[in-house]
Length: 137
Image (tube, rainbow, N blue to C red; front, side, top):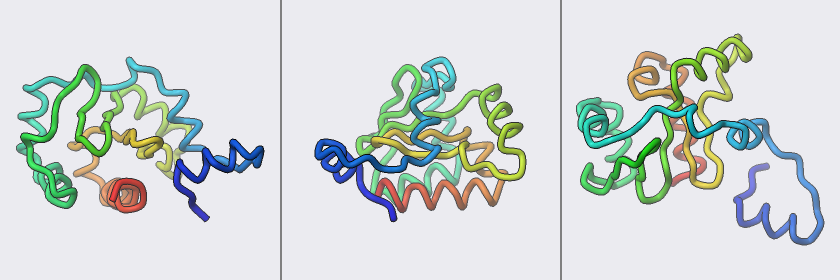
């Protein structure tokens, strides 16, 4: 059973410990330099990707509402971080049969491979849409 971060915080304050998923632990362990740098030029390149446009459309957002920060995109509802190639390769090797740790969302922080990588994999697209629907909508 999934709970919201607010429910988790309330239960933790009451002293009730809960099992936490591996994704939450992975997100906490990821360092700042594990993410692709973001700027206006990278945001312009992303806007040319059909998948990125579809995601913004599903979130009822326009490109003008997305702001490129140092290492993430500020999408308003959440911050979106894209993993560097080296981190993706390490995660893929560690989770060879499954790529569960590649896309996760904790505390309105979405972490994923690049849009180009996701667009090439039906499994990653499915995971991304599932994460967005479950955590961000």
